[in-house]
Length: 463
Image (cartoon, rainbow, N blue to C red; front, side):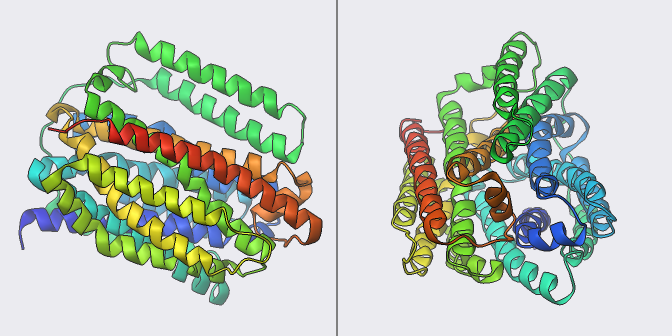
């Protein structure tokens, strides 16, 4: 077996573990909330803290990988993620679980921030698309396993085992990582601690403000969110003045890299909240169990797992622009299908949309990642991959915030929060109002997806 194949297997294990954890936690939300006697607004932070940490740390952790070694940082990610999974499983209360989830996110960020850079180190540019295609397939396989294991483990053994399942995977991944991953292309860089803190506070204010506006807890949610956005603007001004900033805007002078990053951002903002909304529709309006709702999305995961490597290989031959843009068109088609959902629609329409989504995932992400990394300087692979993960994570966070805020604007705050964690089903007029809210959120998502498509189409030919 070639060394590059062994490296890819290690990176796949990391991707699968992180993907399993993402989908598996969503299904266990009601059980976690009830088991730990937590308030609904507290349990939501087991999800939000993960996204905020990932959005804040990925660039810095990619930069640390450039300085001290990407292989070392990736393997450290296995260690941190595995230990945090154990502490999450043993968590006696919701605060302990939230802290463990935050530490888990640090481990996941260590792996995600350096995996793309390791691929760029090991594989020639003519094979980058194929390699990223396998990583995309790993995410899809992890998503399928998360859905299946989440339902089975939560039902038969309890929610704590959704975290315990990561321990053997992490141990195996660490063993193989220490054996096959090697550090190359080390460089000297400075860390931007102030920028990292400012960005973290900005994202926390936006998230807490949006959640508070939905729950109507303090009445200052909108002001907090505005303050967070203002702090975000200050962050960009501060970064522009640094010689070695957290997000170096000078990298964006490369047209292909700039538009590929923007396409990734708008895709994350536009589509990552769509599946969340559809899952809420299936559970909250149609009364499906979390497992049965998630199973309707499995065809998309299967298709993306199968097609990802092939589409990545195709992008190596014909370039990323056309493949990635066609993938975005598939996401737009899926959103249009979801816009047809009503209070009495055939739920199997969701499976049709999931097919479009699966094709879109297999085409856009491997091709777009290839375009980004093939235009990145060798001594900045970790930083560029970190920036890509960073803006994607921020996009996912914003996507959830937009989806929650717009879709739930028509519901009483108590119903909105209970629906969010899957502890209630809405009927009658409230159901119709919620569907209207979902359609409004989906329309916003469609616009954002089309903006991503425009950036993808005009990016130009990559190196």
